[in-house]
Length: 124
Picture 1 (cartoon, rainbow, N blue to C red):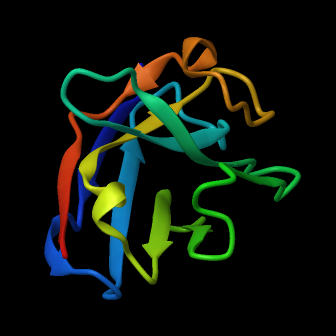
Picture 2: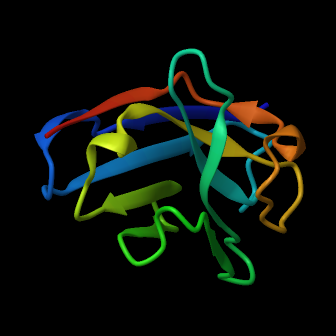
Picture 3: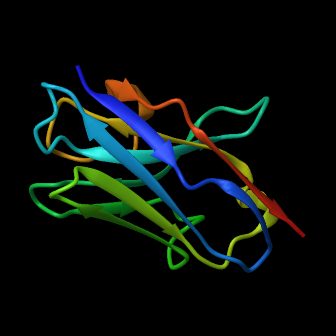
């Protein structure tokens, strides 16, 4: 099993920045591919960014390219999402996810473990 705990959400104004963190633990975690997704009430959960700890490959949704940066702290098994130039439409619950595989994916169905989420609210 892999346990994922997100932190760093909050209320900010448009144009501000936030950094989300996701710390992984558990006997099954071994540099698995990880990603960030977000969900607004009444809408489907959508892909934001993903990262491969082995190939260092990064994937981004078009809506966040150039504004969000995914990175990791290997020693502390922590995945980060640096969010700059935030917009009101970025408001959502952000979820961290991990795969059993090493390759990142944009498909939420291909992720096996999920955190509980952290709320990000961007006011206009």
